[in-house]
Length: 81
Image 1 (tube, rainbow, N blue to C red):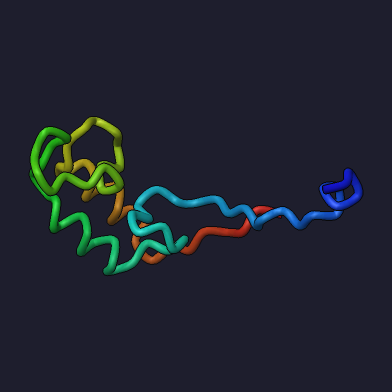
Image 2: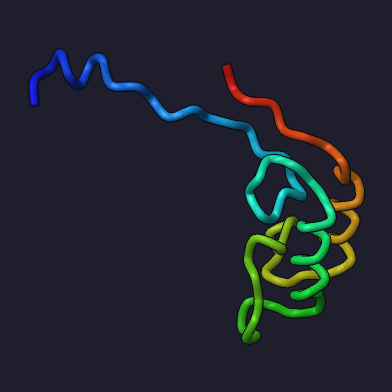
C-alpha cells in the first residue's frame, strides 16, 4: 500500500452522540427508553446490566438515568462537520 493510497482513503463519518442515546442510532427514542426500562434497577454486578443504559456513569441504572433520557427525549444528534 502506498502513501498516496493512504492519503486518499476516505475517513468514516463522525457523529456527536447525545446523552440518552442508548442504542447508538443518534436519536433519543422509545427504543432507548425500552432498553433503559429493561435494565432499570440493575448495577454492574447484576446479570443483564447494560452499561449503555447507565447514562450518568455511576454503575447502576436509576431514576437519574431516566431523568437524563427524558431530558433529551426526541432529540437527534448532529453529524460532525
